[in-house]
Image (tube, rainbow, N blue to C red):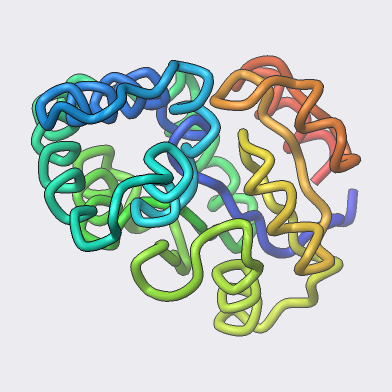
Length: 218
């Protein structure tokens, strides 16, 4: 059956890697260390996928931007302690390899820093399977469409033949702004009902369902 899409762009945290809990705990621990208001789990989950500065502006609206660096340092300290124990979702690595073998172009658009993404790409053995990646510290953070549009331009594909796959409303809004179809991963950071507001092609409940959808519909 002919392919519907040429390029599949994945978010990383909460979509390929089961890291939402570690992100929330690390952000809460950083705020606790510094005597800052500790965000609720719901609030902390909402900012997953954003660049760190945009995330801090949301969860700590009264904090002067000049102090963001201190919070980021503590956040990275706590996240790095957990980093080695954070798994990919079951079946994620095999699915990425299969999609690559099937001839899809694969990309990543993530709120992670370039350093952080490179670290996990190497650690998971997936670095060579992605044709291009973009990170929040290289341009605009989600939900701005910049990362997605840059990937489309870099790989020379049509927006209509690109699919954005993510677990947050930031991913869905980015895709919508770029005029790119999207697929919601309702097993990650944001609840299904919020993802459905952006009319994704589908909204899947676990990674196994996501993999089946891609194999049957992409």
